[in-house]
Image (cartoon, rainbow, N blue to C red):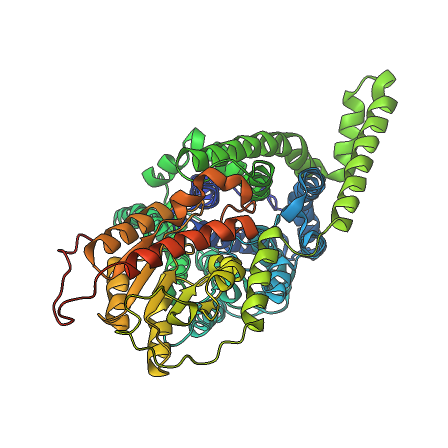
Length: 624
């Protein structure tokens, strides 16, 4: 039994902690529902990790202090009551909705459900080569990767506490947990390419080994404070209260700043950035424990507390709902007000789903268990309606389960956009592209540009257009890769220059997968030299950085005589309904329009008279 002065397991409440949860879930939701608006919003997951590590370790240690033991079975039962009912409801409802919507949302659904019910989503996504930051085929239950990491922690950590931590002195506990946190953070940093090149961070982001430091930091804070009593004598001096209060406020401000400026493709995020987020989160939690904390009272205001209490449900529902809404509205504009509209619809549905789930499912089962909740429901219903209510409930559950099974069986194997990309890659692989003979640029100055004079570098959008470009320009060299960003273009061009493979006309079709600056464009132009011509293709994608990228490309093309803009974005706007549901990739119709815009830009460059003096800069002042 717990002592009268000790809270029962799972009853711990720290004023203001729901406010930190609210901050975490809000940043994640904005990051997903309004792409590009809050480029670092993904770090809310790391805040959750620290909160979970702190709470779980605190509960375990306080249970042992109060009872002399830790009931592993009791802990795991309480975790199951807390997490599984809402998860089961989410899976049944969203799988059924996916069956109704159809298309790409069914791709890989079986694997995702297996990952959800076995607490292994993160590792299955890694094994499948999924990308957390990619959008070619957005997995319906992609967000469950973090729940898998936490569930793995809930399975392993209590065992370590029982077998090891409670049997060694407190300083040794702290040293061991700190070593785990440091090792995980260092392993994440070492897993990033040494040259800092653009990379897909999914493996280091999803991996439990590389992303366990947040949970360990939270556990460290719990061990540090529980032995002294939460809010105990160590935190009562005026200097300590003032310092922690200020530290908490500055930590929240820093977390918000990082959410604004730390994009997920930044090397800095994985070489200390996310570790810093964990430390800042721990400081904020510690500040809540100061007796009479103004900081805690501010974060414990009713709106934040309401969001924080429902943060689990809000996190569960927001991503699957967003994917389903986007798939159900394939022609809805995905930029400007259109993007806000899709995000707003998804948010409204999320709140409508998470609120009753919290009240009628999560809380009753958490407090009374499965049997107690069932008895309470039956007792509350009139005797004459109990049989009808039970039958109706069973019918609904059976219908959802049956529809979910059909949804798993309806997996098309690959998404629409993926099919277009693979077709383009196959066309490139099959095309014979021998090294071109040196081109006499003076002799061809007045001729129509041919394929063997063009080198095209791009991402998956260029892959989708490859068959049409090859048909229009036989002999063209196409170098395209999924998720490639503009920051990689200088390196690609340097490789071609070293091999003597640069051609008179270079086409750059990048900008879909992240923002870039004017310095990168200047570097690209410097690498191709003044005697070659450059076509820059702008982008069409429902992503927040696209308008800025397109403005930058337009300004760049206006500055230089040998640079021309292929305005793909404007050309495709009347035909968005012809694109894949992601509104980024396309089939043959879109590939034809893409090729036509490139062809027009190449022809405009070919029609210009030759430069009078190649050493003379004919550019305008750079406005970007």
